[in-house]
Length: 230
Image (cartoon, rainbow, N blue to C red; front, side, top):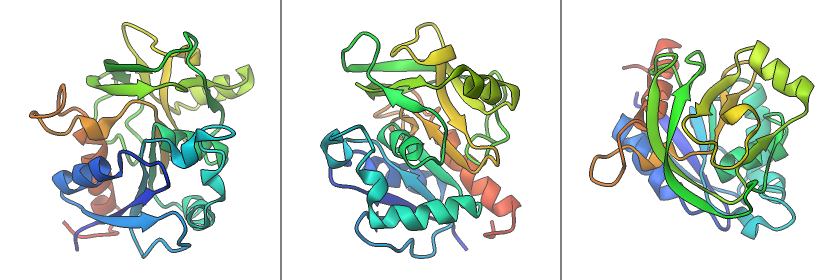
């Protein structure tokens, strides 16, 4: 059985089609999920894509967390469903308290769009198992509110438990504390990352194909866990 991975579309989502294509290139089947429908349609994993859900009113992701689909997603995440939040999706995950901390305005107060080098710090999560610890990758970054912040206790816990999955290299583009680009929950099934791996899955359009590893990691994890067959 080929893994079915849902991609949620909120009003203002921009990168849902890109996420769907990345899933397909990795060997999965993408399933469109609508924000107003409280149904995950039996998918084996979910991606919350980048964009500007609900126009980023109040705070980025603050309204999206009240979407009917999110109630189902929170329950599923707590039950072990693999979830990847990219950029705005990362913001939705923190607003929904599936991940700690928050994403705030870039410290230089400007939107940034660049190819960003990262170092993989954790390959124990469902979404990073195809990488080597210390591996350097290059994927696009585009955000205005991408600075990851948390109190010192939370930051120390993330570091101590190995839950930082990726850090910015060469430049910290948005003022994220401790150069954090992505984190995971304690169980390794929920991951949020600010740069965009779905934009680095094909040589024709990306600076690399380094982002594909996030999606192949998921599919291999599902096979290894016996949730789908190879």
